[in-house]
Length: 392
Ligand code: ASP
Image (cartoon, rainbow, N blue to C red; front, side, top):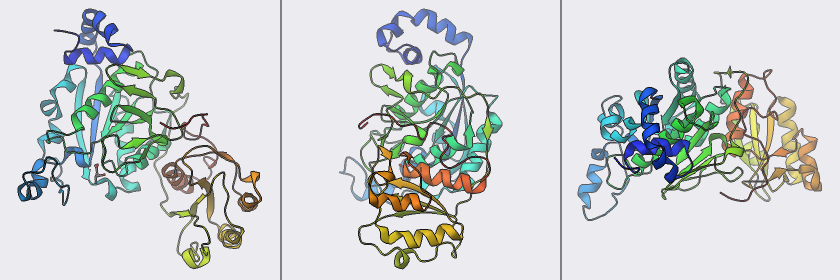
């Protein structure tokens, strides 16, 4: 069997060049046989596991279309799909480099996922932490970034790879990206030292379209192209092309302590600042309506018009927590730079690295439920490290 056989892919993960993978094939095969990594795949839903028949009406309506119209896709009943449960038959290459166990935790469109689902998933990961070397989470793409943030902040110090992936087209479609994304996710998992590989990879990440991104820095930035995710403020952890190039310097080091937290308070809103907007008219008394956290999406380094200050002061005085973010996708917050930003400081906002909006929202939810355990400005899991970096 040659270097390009499915089994060789496993060795590519621990070497960085395909030639090396070929050289080490014989030795690697023996090692792999001796200790096959155990990987748990939790399925949560999304396009990846949807059946082709979910789109049947559209396909029949216009069979000439090379790409079916994606309307009205329905989810199979939980557990009914061979795509979900018998993944090693549908994607046999997966079993070439790990023992895979699959559990369908839920089968939802990810837009239906809420804090309770993040907790269900985190508890499932926590319960199987000792039994497996790495974890894959198959998930809808729409809110995958939120779930990745939630897992990274809930399971600080988990110290094993948790790789979320999904696809833009269902696994059963000829042009689906699901197969490659699953194989790439597993490739990254088995490269970790926890699986007997050579890479210090222990964190929550999203693997999609040839990139492994830190989970709490990733954002869904395209609804239609295969490369749906970007990481505007942090470099990719790995790039999967013909070989796998790991960005070793950017991986989160192993944590000393495992600190799981399983509670969220979802009473949080995102408030994007719009030029000339009257916040009282737009938002009114959020505290009175039960909101306890505002993620303020300001301009640039944290600027907003002074007219916001009375409204913000009123809300924070009543007890709403405020987290300043920016509509820019990378850089640092420095509200002290301009007079316009001084208002942010007056209401308690702080300077600091830019977190993704997804991460800011999830962190606020976690903080509200665990107010004494960590400060909103304290980095928990690599979500707020500033990197001199442009674009990804
Ligand atoms: N609506 C789907 C979801 O996020 C889209 C996808 O999986 O790509 O669940």
